[in-house]
Image (cartoon, rainbow, N blue to C red; front, side):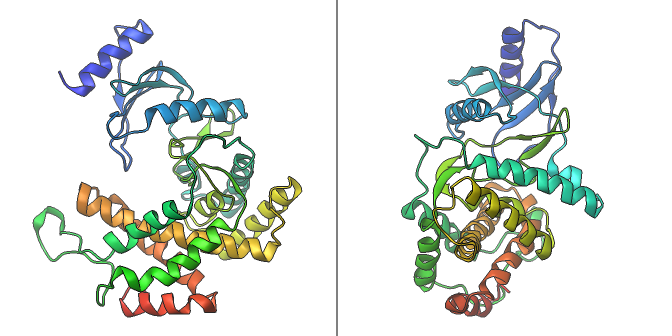
Length: 331
């Protein structure tokens, strides 16, 4: 019996509906599979690779804090089957693609409000996004980004995202230490860890829902803001990003969450946290293609690397990292 057949039998059992039809939804970068029905979403989430217990716990935590999330109605954690509330099929990315500036600004300002409120969710018991965690993620960039991606279908020349030599990991050590210093200098709060336009849903009632939060940690306050306004999948203008940052800083300062950091100090923390996230993401996108055969994110690498280039140009103390990446043909 296939996993899908097992899931269908389980869905019929928990709903009491033998006539239930499960329609497959487009997959994501993980090994989860989703199916829509008139009883909600059913997920095939293999327990050997997915954080199903964490998903259920954090869903309850976010719901208790007033967030719209895919509430878990039933769960078989042993087999990795979940029955969840359906938040609809339109993400923030879908809503802003092709939208005019006025609508885009409105939706992102609404998403900014959700992002800011996430910082107020209790973070007790979550993994700590500490220096070893940060350094492990940065190592994803040095381990994977400088590999050639095999040509699709085995034909043609390999694809690569650098034009020069492949650097050695120790060449990045000093700069990665500076980035880690900036990340851990911030107040630590509940951190979604992947709060971008594909994980924000246009829920019924013109509200915004949040998904894909099973990797949440106790982490730096600027991280989710980076994920939102320096999104790997959708570019906002620098002027609008600055405006959103200013609004966000006003919120966290007003709530006593700034840790005494001035707006300038918080901006630097934001920028260097962005470096950490974007370098990691670029490495993950190559890893997905090389290791897992998932090539869809390769198209997102140029935007992700453009954020790195933009930030490094702002900080003289990081000019050596800019020079190193330029020498390697990344820019």
